[in-house]
Length: 486
Image (cartoon, rainbow, N blue to C red; front, side, top):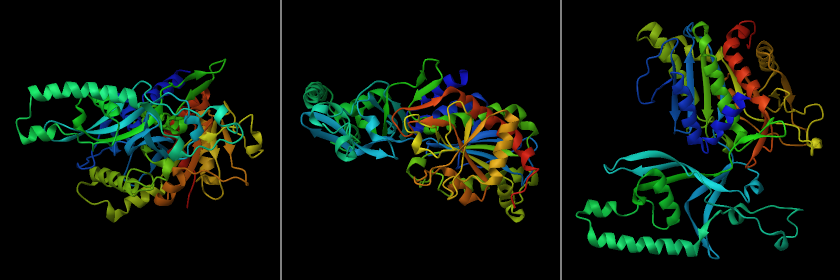
């Protein structure tokens, strides 16, 4: 139960991918991990552990085994930091029928009806101009309800319980306030501003420029800009760019009469981001005996296809792994290049990837939507996911490795395969397996209401996942010594 509560705390602190990365960095820093930067020279040795970020929305945590030698494999877990949500448009102000609404884009494939009648807030990243003129990234999380997408009353939509299909462009704009209160607030601030201007006029062109807003006039409601500026302790004119996501303010919590459930937003895929990092830090006491490099890769943009510089469908992962291989080889070989030994290719041939993303638990009200023999259950263990069209990357060989890790870690497993008359979702597993040529298996915790504004899983899945990932890092090299992936 303690690990379930830790996951709940992690989710409540992580309303956006940027906050996920910050939460992960806090965990890693607490266990002695050092941050490396892409634009610096890396000098790496066995027993080092460190992390590197990309766009501050993807993070890669690395722990080098004490028995590592050049050409040895990587033990990799991959998950993602993003979840379906509503995202603020660059020009968001929308005034209609006496209300100020916020124009949004739908991010990912969400169950958008679940966003109606929620107490929403915003979180994400802002670019702020400092007095020196430099730009600084700052994270913001307004920790109170500021917006809502209200439903249309049943009296005006008699078919709502038969077929509800909202138009995301027309019906999903959250209400921020009324135009009346916005006008009153702006008039009051304007009066104060005029008095200030009369008593303290700009003394130079630079002062005059500083008094002008950086965010284009009319891009966002003034009330929103004022709120964000207050949260960041800066002037509204210092706000240069807003990269904001909407989030439900209802916190994640335990539920059920026996407190066996977790009700939370963003379980897909903060569940595996958290469990993967916990598995890595829990395995550190055995690091000095490990011959592999242990890595957790947490990517942004999985929900929209992974096609970005920080997504799994980027050349960045291969470039990072090649750099790790070369930097570690240099510690053994001085200044000699690792390229002539093809160490990167040797390393990938000896590596393994666990793609960790949530799985569909059987729904008691819709059991017919599941393949009859593959119905993952709560408290039934971690789910091993199969798809012969390679939407999941699991093969017979990689499944055998996972089963052996689970056996040694005393973690139960269950299987999932989609019905033949339904399309199958995908993960980063096939993407990374294709790019790296690394044997891969897809796993995840069982959950309900996937891609809803609020999802549901069981508490035992958390401990099962952490135990499996810890055992994976500790047991994988020994297991692979008995197998061949030629």
